[in-house]
Image 1 (cartoon, rainbow, N blue to C red):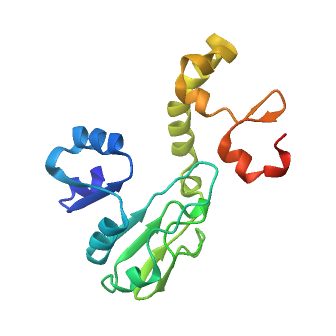
Image 2 (image 1 turned 90 degrees about the vertical axis):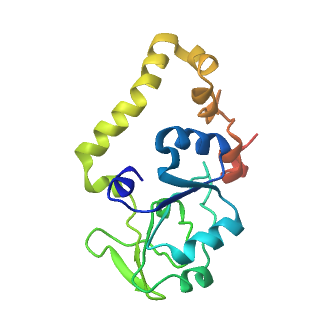
Length: 180
């Protein structure tokens, strides 16, 4: 979004988290249009988008389809769709996984890009970014052990298995036969 804004693009960001939208407002101010993501707002903005980036993540689950084929049909020919949620099944009905060697295809007149593991194309940069984002958590775990999960709510929410039991609700739904 920063790059697009810097290039003078009109940017709209949709999110279901009011907290995230408030945070984005502190970063972008009035330079982007921030919208609460709903069926109505998606149906409003998608047909006019020259570039649509799907970035839906539901921890432990497949990404829901938020953009239907009929909505893609309303986009301008030559528009581009990138779905970074393709690793989790994708959030756009017409998008199929592609590859680095054959990254795009056209469906409904719209260019689709669905390369899984996009950071894999830039492994050094991806590793640095991952290290920078996880280091604070690693340090808390190193300094406080299991108590770090009580100190940091994000770490606590990330706990999947404890004492040989699946404790994370989303993981329990994926593996119901393993829940005791």
